Length: 528
Image (cartoon, rainbow, N blue to C red):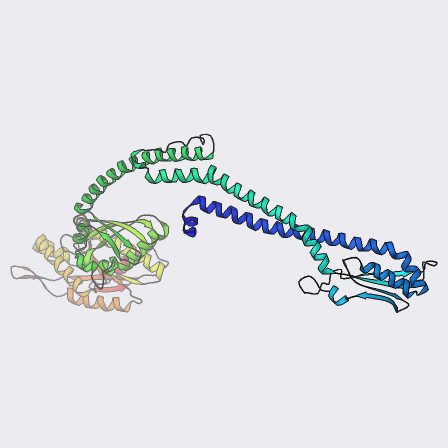
C-alpha cells in the first residue's frame, strides 16, 4: 500500500524523498558530530593525562635520580587512582622502579579490537641537576574503555538533540512542501482529468496561488487549451480540405489519359493508374504477380537507356525525358518524364505519342526517299554520308562510296519517252537494292545518277566485286512495256574513306573516278 502510494502520489513521493534525504543527512551529520565530539573528548582526556605527568614530573626526576623504589611506588599508586589510567611503569637505567595496572587490558578498545592510535604516553625523565642527562622514563597506558565511555557519555546528549532537530526539520519541510506544493498540484491534476479541453473548458485559478508558480502553471494550461482549440479548428478545416483535394486528385489520377506512376531505382512499380496499364499494354496481375514485372521489363530492348535515365534523375535530382516504343512495336511510342521524389523513389508520367511519332517518321521518310524509285534521295544520302564520316573519324571505321551514272539513258528517253525512262530508273534502283546489304544505303541523287554507301568496308575489294556484279546485272535488257526492252549501261566511281578526309573531298574523289569510267568507254568502274 505504501509503495503504491509512493508510486502514484506526488505528495507521498515528495514526503518520502524529503524524509529519506533528512534521514541520510542526519545519519551522516550525526556520525560526523559523534566523531568530532569523540576526537575532542579524547584529546581532552589525553591533555589531562599530560597535565598529570607534568604535575609529578619533578618528583619523578628525584625518584629516578635516587633510584628510590618507595617514592616511585607512591607515584605509581597516585597515578593509578585516576580512573583513566590503566597501567604505569617507571624505569631508571633500564631497571623497573615500580609498575602497576594491566597493560594488555588497557591496549584494547571498547569493542575488543586493538587500539593503535595514541595507545600510551611515554616521557623521558632527565636529571634534576643536569637537563642533558637522562636518568629514567615513565610509560603511562590509558584505559581506552574508560575513555570511550566518558566520550560516549559526553556525546550522547548532543547526538540526541541533533537527531531530534533533524527529524523536526524533515517533518516540517515535508509538511510545508505537501501543503504548499504537492497538494495544490494534485488538486490541479484531478481537475485536469475531469476537464473537457476540446469544449474550451478551463481550470479555475486556485485561491492563494494567484501570483506564484502554481498560478502561472494554471494560466499556462489555460492558454494551452485556448491554443489547442484554435489548432483543432484549423486541423478540422484542413482535414476537410485535404479530403476534398484527395478525392479530386484521385478522380484525376484514375481517369487521366496520361500514365502516372511511381517507380523505385530497381524498376519496381509502387503505384500506377489505369492509363499506365493501357499505355504499356500490361495487366495489373502481371505487375503484382511472381515474378513481378518491372518498368525495365516493359521497356524491352531500351531497358539499358531507361536505367541510365533513372540513375541520372536520381543522382542529379533533375527531370529526365525519353521516347521509346512499347513492347518493340514500331507503331506504339510513349514520351516518358521522370521526376525525383527521394533517394530511392521517382515519379513518372507517360503520354502516347504514337500518332505524332509516326507522322514525324513518315515525314522524315518522305523527305529522305525518292518518290519514283522508293530508295533514298539526296537529303537522305547527305545525312547518311555525314554520319558515316563522323563514325570514321571517331572510331576509325571505314566505308566505301560508290557513285554511278547510267550510260545511254538519254537515248532511251528520246526513243521511248519519259515513261520508259522512269521504268528503267525503277528497274536499276531495284537491282541496286537487291545487290546491297541491309547495312548499306542506296540512293538516287537525281536524273540517272545513283549512289551506294557500303558500311564497314576496310578495303576496295568488296566494292570492286559489287561493281562488277552491278555492271553485269544493269547491262541486262529491261522490259519497258508493250513487249519492248531497253538496254543501258553504267559508269561507276569508287572511293574508300579515310579519317582525315571531309565529305566534299570524298565525293570529289568518287565523282572523278566515275567520269574517268565514262571517258574511257563507259560500262566500267574505276577507283579514286
